[in-house]
Length: 171
Image 1 (cartoon, helix red, strand yellow):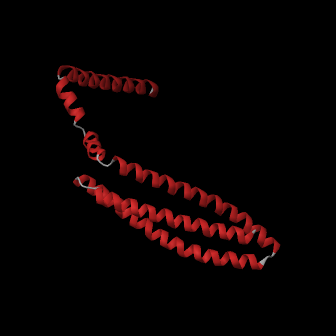
Image 2 (cartoon, rainbow, N blue to C red):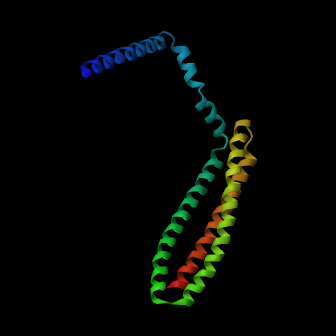
Image 3 (cartoon, helix red, strand yellow):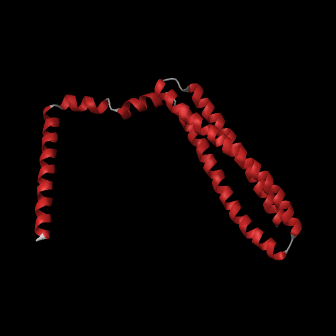
């Protein structure tokens, strides 16, 4: 009994949706100019017109993001390697190597704090960039975003150097 009711409701819903679709397609066929005008002046079209001016800067920002993600990947690989080295050194009882690694770890902790502040600044700059794009003049803001991302990448490179130093001290 429930199966029959479900089938009836499903068929009814399909009939309603099909009727709505036919009405919309008939309206589009009767008024092709209105339909095309609405499509060409959509929100996406206006947004892309504004972004077209800044195409080169957008590519530069994306390239810096790609570099940052590559650096992040390298950091994950090095941290994974460090886990294995720490366990090996801990088992062997080499206290001098652990002491050197702790010093590097302290430096790494301060770099993490600095990186966190830079990432927050970069996030604020990107928010301001969105507003500047809406306003229509975002050249200065793109420069600020690019500078912030370059600083983040440099800080990550410093962290990678410290991780390498830790790895060398534990080997």
